[in-house]
Image 1 (spheres, helix red, strand yellow):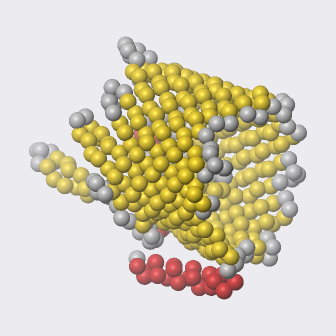
Image 2 (cartoon, helix red, strand yellow):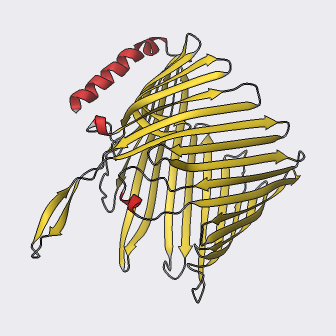
Image 3 (cartoon, one colour):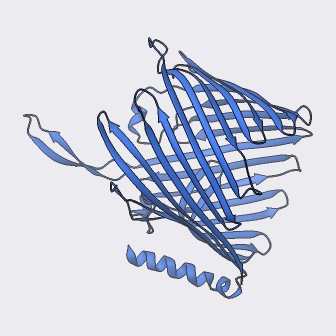
Length: 427
């Protein structure tokens, strides 16, 4: 495994050598954060945590070839957790752009956004502008290890993702996309206690079967004057059924008033060989509509309502609120199979000294029942007070004190502080 990692790094840096010679910029962002809180896993059992996070992002190269990295490592200074101290790499790839003024290639660990295909791979991604009206994308590679550690996943033949997307743009207002996605994932085995026919207990190593996903998706958008339409359908090729269908519309009635509406059909997205496929699962339909009204440049109003419908049950949500330059106020209501909730949310912030000093506060109150037949309602209060400091353009310091109170958590207080530094150098 270590040999494969060395080979991978050698190939990446070999291809990146032109960028090292011709590089014009070196930029990055370093973020340090500290979060202290108390956790209650079960009744009368609590644990205290003081976690530190260090994230880093570096970009090195020019407009034609560049090297990108993004990662994080964390540690608990109070109660050690599994995985503490490991470096998690979310992004580590070389990008070669403007190949014949039409193509782009990425090699390494990278995110993928291609219609039905969404995820992160250790592999390659190719984008080609085949014509003014046609763009094509293809990708393939291994899945990341479960803890995002900096190495290739074991059994690559059983842990991979691949697919592609073609985007057609017949004119300025139309976009049509057809995509394909194939993913296989082998779950890790584990030891479990079992009993034989006479009650003797023994340890058994369980090897779960591999999971598989295979989807195609067709989506299209159309913009005409001040109205835009969007539609999408996802088809499960293994299950042989429609997995998701969506249609939405957004219309600017005037420069101050916007309406939006959508319909969504969802079928539970279960992988092949999943134990959940043995149970009865039910599709649902969601209908949503809302508006956004700018009364004045400094005062806006909005509202949104939606319903989710099953064959024997339904759920509704409703939100209305207002925004101004330095704060917001909203009321929310939830009802139906998931319980009932009424809540009020308020936030206030005020930048001082050209934004270099900004205090803020958030308050929330809710009254809820976990089920419709519950006899009494529960109350929940939460709040936060924060302070942002930006002494220089390249340095930002955030701090926030969070508080929550209800009959389950009488006094839940948490503290978060974050320091972020970014730089940009021309070489």
